[in-house]
Length: 227
Image (cartoon, one colour):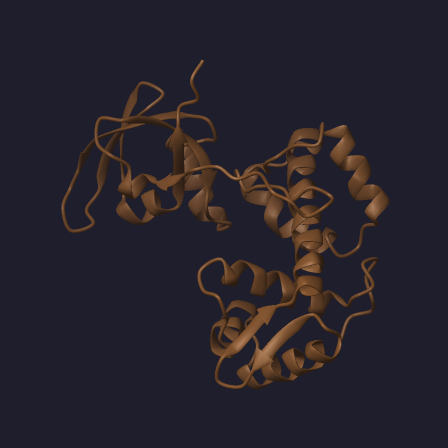
């Protein structure tokens, strides 16, 4: 296991808690198999780790029912997510990284930096609400701004929206999306949608494009803010 990070927990524990938090957004409890797949480790290793975290008060683990974060575990997970997303934004805005490059770099840095460093980044960037993917950045107290969004794959035809979030860390997918002009805050209108999960014809900032259904599921739109 890795040495303790500045949060007081090992890197593997931080990654474990962060993964549970992400998976909990889709189901109340997370199965050991799902978690094993997300972390690319064996299910028995997940069970062993979960049982140790129960002793630390970070997770609730029940055999055959999986795991869920306790309040203490969620606090640690949100702290790591805050670090990751602020680092991603700093890399792009201050150091010239491209969007498809920031995730892996932030994965490495999030465990190494101090709270003071993260607070300094937050101040430098003006305490932002979202990272370069449009993901919400938890505040220092763990709260996050909420925004109503809907996948482009389900967006009503003829209604304009703006790109609010790119729901993928895959570098190739991100390059594909950005090459089609679908950057954050781009204005989008669905012109036509082929049936049976076929491609979509869209207008992006005035230019007509065709994108696949799978790609469209990764692009979340929000209503255009009223002026």
